[in-house]
Length: 53
Image (tube, rainbow, N blue to C red; front, side, top):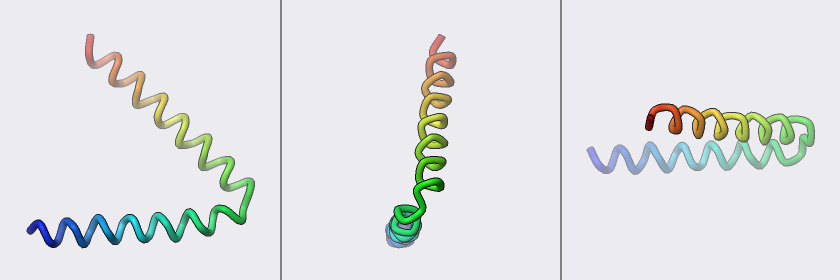
């Protein structure tokens, strides 16, 4: 089971790296992805704050 998880996670990292390389050449998509990631992190932080009350 552990080996399957390692292979799965390695595959995810390789796919994400390939996508990131393609996004580097597209400034508009890169900017949109950065803003989306920032919004997701802020939303996650707010959720954590509200759940800890």
